Image 1 (cartoon, rainbow, N blue to C red):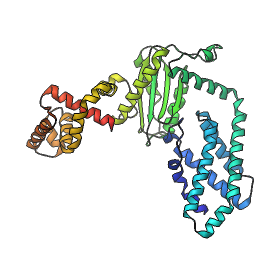
Image 2: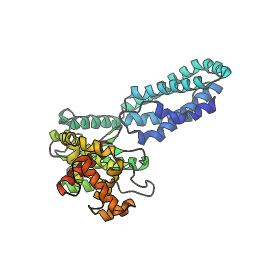
Image 3: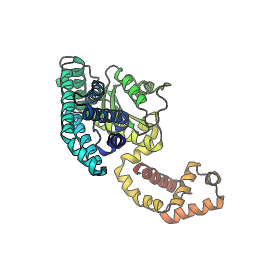
Image 4: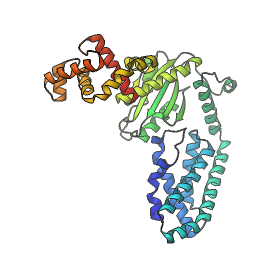
Length: 374
């Protein structure tokens, strides 16, 4: 039974609801580490009785404290232990024979005691840290960035002058994918935290940072880019997409957050990873993604192209080859006449001729919008 329980660890993160406050890609490894420590500790208690092994309890507690420091409510962290125990129990019960089922049910009271013991220990550890000045400062900064992202000046937190708040910020949105290197992400966050006057808030898709505007937008963006300088230990920047937008006042921050979020989304679709990107850098994509009305009018063209993937592929090759049919034919490994035939098919299908510049621009816009929607 212990072996089967250990084998279930890999399914924990998929079965349990993700934390809303932290990106799953950055805590997946730690989640598995915590699940493994809990399973091993429980079965040691089952075999040897209480107390919970100190080494396992230390791992479990430290991981829980880290999540709370990241902004995950203590109630949510404690609820994960109960949900994990429920998942483990249900899966073992489903796959047990009669003898194992009897043993499992006999262990039920001990599992309840184990969960109660661990959650109590974690709760006490968190309470002990509440009086820590660094903990209090972290909570204050989190409340301040929440207010700023909502477009409010956090006057109630500024009266004592403990934390300075700039008048203007560069909003930086980091979108994190499953291929992101947790070590690199942790390094970037650490470097951002060391920028004077910067704030950062995690969420399930990545994190948002507010970096005081120092001189031009370009200069501040360069400061952010320096945080991404990789080292041998962190490796490539795959799975990390960065969009930025300026906010000249606190009231401008919500709009800048939306703009930077859209840019990060565009970077994900373009596989433009590890590059600090402004709206100007992807202006056509940004205009199309931001213009809801434009997308509505392009819907029919998108549907037509999606219904004919061969024509869509040929059109993409044509655009990627700078409107050169011979180069498109080489790219696709087909005869030039076939390219011409297919482009004629695009014109017949959509009513837009890719050989006419203005109509080609509409077709290109439709393809860009379709790629951003996928």
